[in-house]
Image (cartoon, rainbow, N blue to C red; front, side):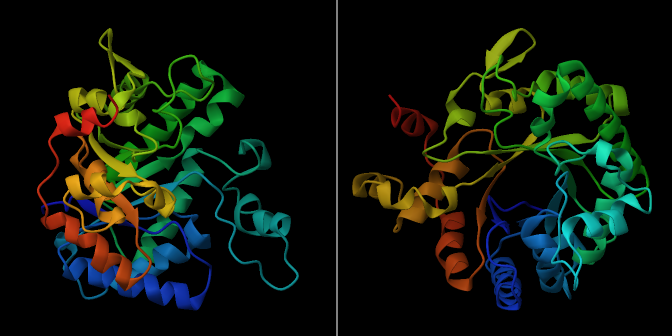
Length: 329
């Protein structure tokens, strides 16, 4: 299957039936326009985003689309009558022995193998799929400042061992890490992620044929670090995150491509024209999808009109990397 250069994200939106229906319709429209990549997470909209995509996938040939999801955060759903978060946590996670309070970081994040397996099965059921294409550890760098480097990478290795097991069982095809700060900030920052150390953990967990194949990180005109900043050291050389991913043979999902629409009003008209985009959103997407090393640019699209506007960029020629670099001097 050919992956589309644009992927539909499902992060934002209210937890309502109307938003669920809109996401399902948007996903179906995106697929009809040639979009094949869909990204979600167990905690997006309390699990409703996964279920909305599951409804959209009904009737589609499984080999015709690619879906990634994430686990790590505690996806507190809408509480039942008289049930608060603590009661829900005990009933769903602590009581059955899936997760204890001691496993939590910041009261909201966990990467234990049993919890990851539990979340993966919930995602598979919600999406209506036996096998998911990609399973991310969700913002693992949140645990780094609390654990310290050595315990943290040991925990990641345990999580990767679990993911290798999921691959063997046919529950996923590949795994990765979906990050926010981890790859963008330089070494020395408390939440800096070393791609080299993650690759070493994958090697230990799965050997030379490990299935750590993807990373996800934000990239847009206001947050260009993945393209510009040499935050990674690989083989003794300083590289940008995109360069390091390319050198390691990893595919890249670029998230927040239009920064939740917050940058669109700031784009000058001449830049929009130069990028061949008829709208600011299309120009912003052109920047992200054109950066060398980006496999898929993700963009939240919860309505059909968003899809209609954004999907048009998939028919445009990508921007020359020299032009992209010139934007920043």
